[in-house]
Length: 121
Image (cartoon, rainbow, N blue to C red; front, side):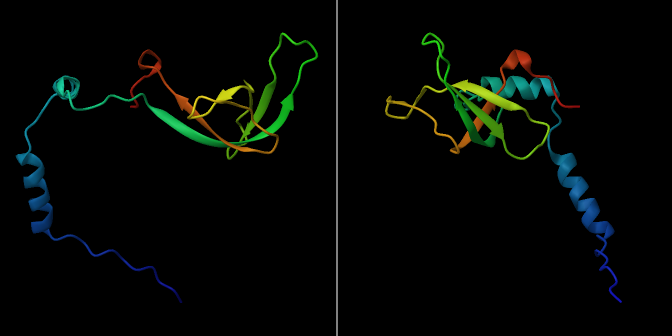
């Protein structure tokens, strides 16, 4: 019979020591913390982002030449995600134009602008 191991309880002295170190920190309002972060010149502000893996499902070529070739990308993981279609004309790190191939693995990066964000409760 397997019985789950119980976690050892913290002693009252350890809890008091933790509270004392937390109380020793200076209290600061949220607006003051934000102002402090904004005034720090060495800190580089970055947009929040997430990277999602995907696979190129198909390459869509239109009959008219004025419409660009499109790559359809399916997002891995969540079944609720839809397929994305992007123009199949990308630029690599050297500035050369490259195209996606069917079955190729890609990483889709999603970033948010400041005006589109709300704080998590």
